[in-house]
Length: 406
Image (cartoon, rainbow, N blue to C red; front, side, top):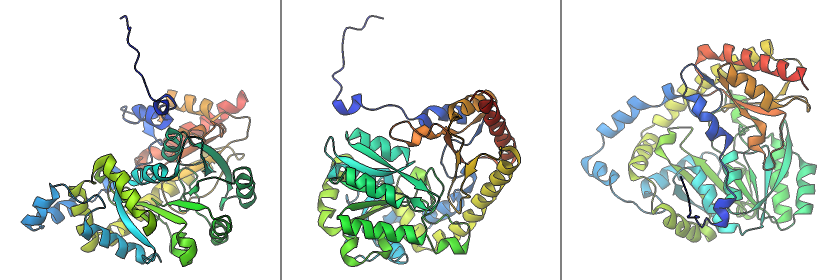
């Protein structure tokens, strides 16, 4: 077919490319495939019965309001429920306010539009959440990737990155059960973050979707948000992004920003230009879910289920992976991050796995510069229990095959 019309795409669109994760999802829905690719909650764990009960018992006027437009900042009752919930995590609302968002990624978008001009720099962990990296790039920002170790972002590496980029607009981190690295920041690293942003007068964007998915009580004590430990002055430099996607349902498309009151109005205007308001129907259910005590019971139910999957994956990794493979044992969340020797290509391992009915995500997806070619992410959250052993065995075989040609 002859094409004689050229679409005048914007500079922003010309910089976009498809995510490897999105491309790999075609395998995830293929019959017989074992997928460790999607970082999604488990389909069989959603609170379907609880949601039906909540909606059935709602007063008629509340049901009607659920079908209507709502305030751009979010339903007042849900905003108050989120505030009450976050106060239990040490966050004060003397300096901050809550903006309900259509998923936490919209929250990150709003902050990006607030602060980023083309050519600006964002400091981010290496590896980092592919959705945020793609979003920052869509604003034509430059991403300075800062390596991590087992306890979070490396202090010396962050200092060096800032020295190279003293006008960086903000630092983006995921302190709890990191996507994709699976790690959790220890107390010393959290204190370093606070001291660092205070000294450099740098904004911290704290992305915290997995906060509640800890696997033991000792780890729970580490999950307190960085914002919840900051003094009043330093707190004004911290913006917190939360979400219902991992603790209720991603299909609800609900998240929240906790941001300094000084920038609340501008953030609201940006959201108004995006979608006017987040889904009222979801907000009504989420507010009742929190207020009526379902949240605590639901989290108590799902944490052991994800721990079982984590344990089965670790057991299979110990059995089938070569001893030179490195990883940090996840203490919560959905992910196991695997590092191979530098001369082994994770893409070759993935090619072998796909040929044998298994899929995961290679490390370069989580780097702004397509580095991390010797690493990959295993998401264990939505894989069937009986498929874990076979799937990890195939990946182990793939590692050994890739080693032969390294």
